[in-house]
Image (cartoon, rainbow, N blue to C red):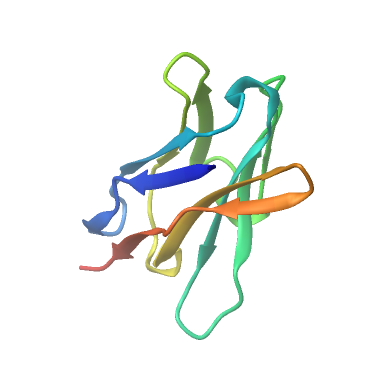
Length: 115
């Protein structure tokens, strides 16, 4: 069974920071790209950041320079460091990966940016 469990969300003021964590089990973690996506109320889910097995990273334009994705292949975790948060970053954040032709998703963690 593949499991992804997100943590680290919460309420933060504009300009603040949060670090999300995603614990992955059930796959040979180091072989797979892992992604962070988010879904704001009333909006479609959007891909935010990706890190592949070679640690190559890609970001959605609105988070470039503010968010950093990283991975720990010993702890089987992926992180999303989010700095200079804005109200428009408010969303449920999900980590997910594709293995054996299927997509596996965590349940998400809520991030709310508000004063």
